[in-house]
Image (cartoon, rainbow, N blue to C red; front, side, top):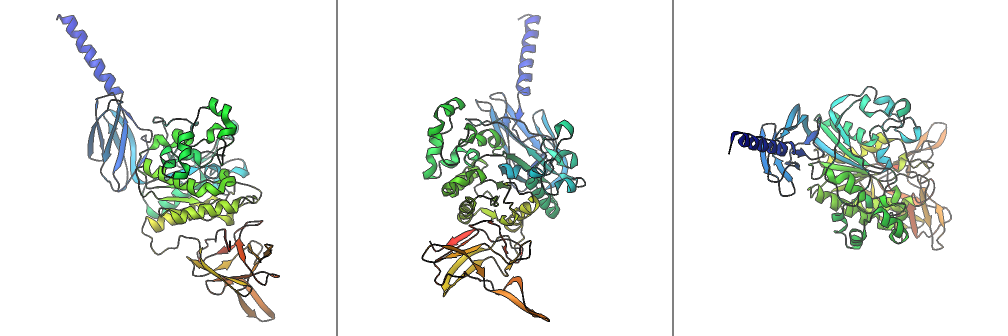
Length: 507
């Protein structure tokens, strides 16, 4: 072989080696300013030329893998302590800068999770986000949102941009960009609560989309775990063209109104690329688009959790979700009860009751900080060692009928009180007798105080931890329900300001 041929071969080998190295890519979550989960093995993955050796380094650790025949590779970093030091994560020559270690959560759902902290339209923004966000700077709180159109098959690639929590990064656009959304208000406040209390870096990954149903956010693997829902994994999704031809046949429950509401299609495009990223847990706010199919929502929630836990490789995935608030629809109470049923059945799930925050003329209540704080209570109690706090709303433990009264006993309460904005003692109880006619019912065990010049004064506090209820004209009560009629607004609280959710007894 002459000198020229040798030179050409050398150049070819060098070029091939360079091409292989250049082919190394990290998975979608891995980008500058990101946060890795502390105290857990951390999955790092990506693609490269088939057979290429990939070395991942971070914080003094080194892990190696060889790309498989499809070019995929993956390593695991050993558990790490929280760190505010911005360090470099490298996969061969690919580098991700300013990487922190702390607590990582995923935020998902539909428009109420998507309601931004700051927006020009008061109907679709947090009540005070524009005020607070002006001065709040948390350089160790980072967030990244992924929004993509639906896909019939899972997608593995994509990019996200991690941003620090500050005014410039959360506000909506100005001028012609005034309709550019800022970041989720619920996720923002949740991150703040965690950071302010734990003092470790907080990372929030998010994927949410207005007008979407739970089925679209559930991976195929989740449906396969619930026998009554297996058909959703076997029958869906279909192409947009096929949906257009068979829409009437394919429509059922929350799967209606477009191909983007088919089972799994938003998971495939928006969340699949994040897996199996190591996260602490997930927060979720969704249900409005499934209100017409409350009968199946509990089972659908199990499918969602099962699928997420499997895909994120977290068999005990903490999953804290907001119960939908009333918005003027009579379908809401049944959905609320289905959500509560799921929370009671899934040990790793917990519900935040928010019926006192609802707006009966708007499906988007804008008091998002309280929603986030009630979700954070679950995290503090169940994950972060705050064993002595109360994180649950009261739930019915037992009930009995004595004469014309229902006597209701509850869990998770030391003291009850009623509060309405107009200072009335109205509550949403109703009772019916054998005739099936529902009548408004009143609490009978309010604490009464006698004061000078006043015969008696009833405050909102109840005597004891039972709730005693009766209705005028119903001498022999048979059934009772709470928050099943307009205005569906919660007003009965335990001692730590957590409201009782909708329920019924006597069926």
